[in-house]
Length: 90
Image 1 (tube, rainbow, N blue to C red):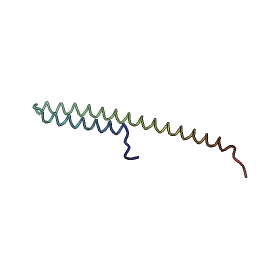
Image 2 (cartoon, one colour; image 1 turned 90 degrees about the vertical axis):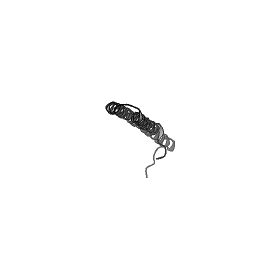
Image 3 (cartoon, helix red, strand yellow; image 1 turned 30 degrees about the vertical axis):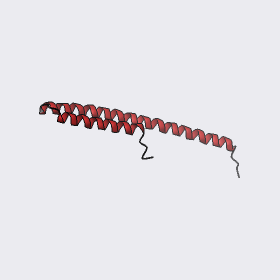
């Protein structure tokens, strides 16, 4: 299960790669130091916001999956109990 990161893990990896690529592009672009630092700061804030959004989406996805599995488990248990019939007392 640890190998299956799902869409949330892929999205986070993509975002981190995009942020790293943007930072490298800014560092090698011909610009003044002050302008480069300003751009890096802006990109860092954007990246932080995007990472926060991705984390929230991932938590929501996991919560929905957990709720769905819990409901399915409860329904399965109820169906099993109904199929088994009434409990006998000894």
